[in-house]
Image 1 (cartoon, protein in one colour):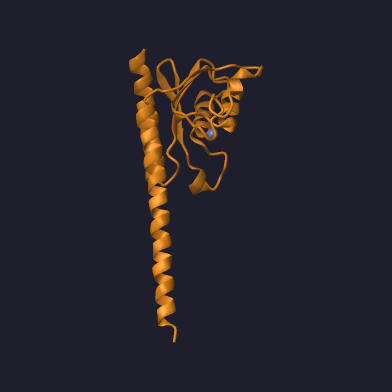
Image 2 (cartoon, rainbow, N blue to C red; image 1 turned 90 degrees about the vertical axis):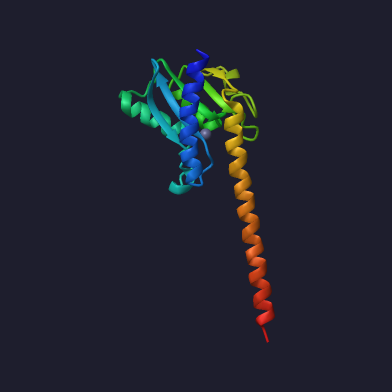
Length: 171
Ligand SMILES: [Zn+2]
């Protein structure tokens, strides 16, 4: 059983790496039914400039399309980061059975970190299991945000240099 969780989380991580390579916040998700991947997705919010295109919503969209149903019966989701309120809402609305996530999302997680939406009496409850390949999932996020900070710093330094050049060139 544990092998399966890690196997599917590695698939989600592979998708998160694709997001990472496209300079998107690296989150990946797969939806599994009877041991088979029926939908997958990664965050494409930035390249599409669309706030709803998180890994989970893209994966749900694909799974619904593949299965020809809005109701994802007997489907489980593997996602590298704890889902946000929007995605937790989409998980409730698509009736996903169990959610397995990797890293905690302390700033926006709606499965226990900021809030646990499953503590409330909604019409559907999913099983939530965190910490699957947590270190690898968290490491990818850390690496991404470190790069963002480094790039910002470099940009600032370039601007500074440029400004001082302009100033020295002035008569
Ligand atoms: Zn989300």
